[in-house]
Image: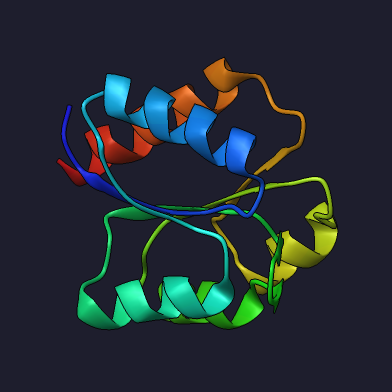
Length: 119
């Protein structure tokens, strides 16, 4: 399986767990980004195939980055303990939401599904 996932997560242990899980799936990881600005910088270089975003990053809420990705039709998975599922679903139709703590299998299944659809 191939593809590129932008990972925006400011908790180092969670970010590394996700990165290793994605790499084990054969996915290229961009990041992890601990800040919204770092994510915006990576997106300005090149759009990823999908993104996994924590809502609350070190420099604030992720919405500016999520808006850019959503406008570019990049699939988004929100992985957050701060997620308001109704707000996110209304603002980002089609986005997936996995509240923390999420089972790794939930995230793997969603990533696999998206990559299968895009490939």
